[in-house]
Image (cartoon, rainbow, N blue to C red; front, side):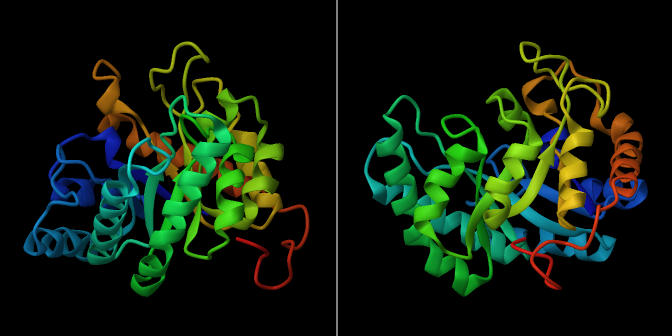
Length: 279
């Protein structure tokens, strides 16, 4: 498994510093938060995108994902959401990122309605994503926090460039064990976000392994399935400014994930033949 961190943990940090931190502490990749607060976002001009891509290339660190804030099940007309999706996919392409994260954002609207709206919008952006070599990933989050929720949207879309981002916190909060979540997400899975919290009521970020999330069970089921994709530590410093700084936790967090991944060996050959199955 490949290890990465999200720049949500280092809000506002210049990208040269992000790349240097990743290289120094042994991270193979970075998930870039694409928000106007950050150095690069969907409104950034071409020269800033090229400069950002160059920083990571020179550091030998893969900028593998762009975490956007499009809410594909949000109420309202399709037009504004489709324009946001278009801009996010083009940003990911310009940065050389494989993945572009989106949220459900269905709010309180009925689930069948939210599912249909999200599937329609994701289906509409799929041809552009395919043309540009980007996979748009629906995160298990907010109105669709479980794997079963996400699958209700992704199944009808049925496109290789539309998939799922497994946020382990949200499936756990939704009452799903990793052994239940993974088989449902497997046909759609892009990558996995890990984190740790003190409890279901205290969601402030804590160092990996210091909280209650079933990170070992998550990595075990991934390894048993022969999965070798990205594990990305999403440390939510931006939302919890009093939390410890990510820079101080980075090296130990990477060592913790590496130990988990190396210790969770597959029980047998990967399912699905030589290609490693649906992943």
